[in-house]
Length: 419
Ligand SMILES: Nc1nc2c(ncn2[C@@H]2O[C@H](COP(=O)(O)OP(=O)(O)O)[C@@H](O)[C@H]2O)c(=O)[nH]1
Ligand SMILES: [Mg+2]
Image (cartoon, rainbow, N blue to C red; front, side, top):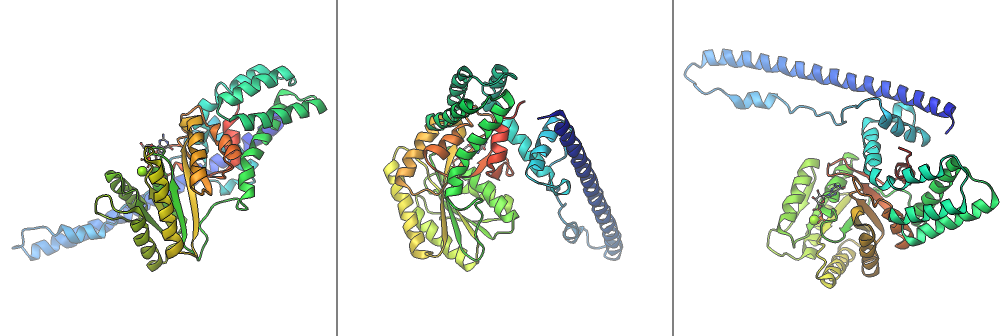
């Protein structure tokens, strides 16, 4: 990046920061005003109560109930606090600007997420870009530096196929022209992005959102512990926040605690959970009930949590097939997505799981979780290239907001950020 454009971006980021700061200040003032009004109401009510008490001296108990009803629950600030105007902010704001966002269109939420994503991919980046940049410096790329790059890509779990692809197109490019370090990185980013974008383009659907006017059913599948239930909770929040009528089906009837875990998530986003109390209930029966409820309530999106025990994989696949059969029968017009949840920290192991699931269950997309604090974030590329699955969402943390629709530009920029 030239000094000039970096100066401009910094200026842009500074303006965005000032605007967000102002907005946050206004929000705080608004909250303060509301709080003051509430206090005033409360005071008036207390006065009234006092009068009443004096009138009804016989009544000893204070009527707490009516007072409580007046005090509405505090409106929570939905956005996280604005942090410092630092390198994280500037980097995140620059990424948003690069995607055509206007200053007044960005939110603290987005900045927060991008900061998290970049921090999460730090381990993947270390020993990859940092090393690469050290090695390349400002010198033009050479065939030897390509060998090093090859090793680094494989080490970051990008996968053999994707690595081969990238290295051979870089080699071809080098035969045509001299490529400096910076231009090399840019070319590399483009190559990686096009690998990850290919299945998304092939699916004919850039962004996965529930289709309005239809029942959308999203099945979350994957082995135990990868983050299915957590991801489903975050999805429920994302979807209800975007005003989709959402419902959860607790079809992991194998783990007793799974239903409780889901209910906690459901409560947090105000989404109902359909479950079956009997032990070892049939998952397909839960889905059957959930579809009934979804139809009755005119729901837009039904999120289905499934079991993931690996030791009885055949049963698991049978179970998924049975769930799908019920859906075909009960809701033939619904739009079904089978999303494989993959734990990025499992690297090549996760890739193996993806391949075996893809063979037996018809998958339509992937969700990569636990991108925070793993050195194996590159596995996302391998999933796109080797299992041919569009990545739909990524998770980078255990919080309710730590999941976002996948954005390949942001992902690659975060993976190859130069700090
Ligand atoms: N750090 C981190 N932990 C996660 C993420 N997603 C899920 N987890 C954790 O992974 C563990 C297993 O998650 P769970 O949703 O129960 O997995 P399931 O068995 O596939 O349903 C839990 O401790 C989650 O808090 C993530 O994006 N980042
Ligand atoms: Mg679970």
